[in-house]
Length: 204
Image (cartoon, rainbow, N blue to C red; front, side, top):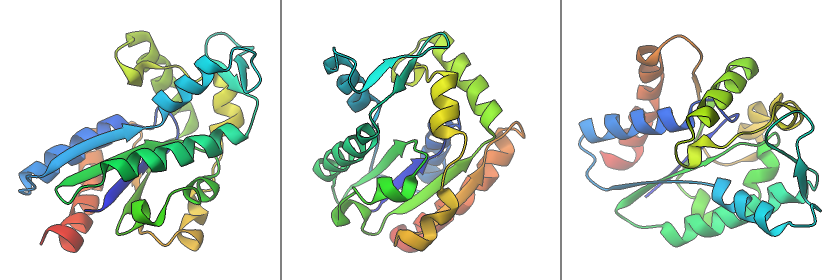
């Protein structure tokens, strides 16, 4: 089965996109297992073990943390690839979520087994909207999605990224969807092209 990468800034709506894709795929008749993973639990473990604050430190602006060792992102990608490899199955569609400023660099750490036959979905959402959603998500304090990325870290790491360069460097189809304040109906319409792509290539 292919893997579906859901990428974009923290707060861009990866969780909502996963939920809608799950609903649409079920409506289209997909009966296999649907599994969602992301690298936050890995990052959380790195921070917990970094008691000397060699790789991260508390954010200067309020809540959250700041990454001070850039190799953290490489370690995250490698660990996420290993986790994805372990979960590969003929009857399982795996959704892999993460956020980066340098996606070209990140995808270099994913194994050929994970990238094979996969697709990348970049969720395009303005920075300020992502920040607002990030704060609201944290205030709800519900599950792993309720972690806060400080605005300091958001500006440093996620204000700009290289998603437009991905098609030149990664031999995986890249689809772009917009998720601003236009409403769920518009987002659902955007995501139908992802479902159509999956159905055409893998389910028909």
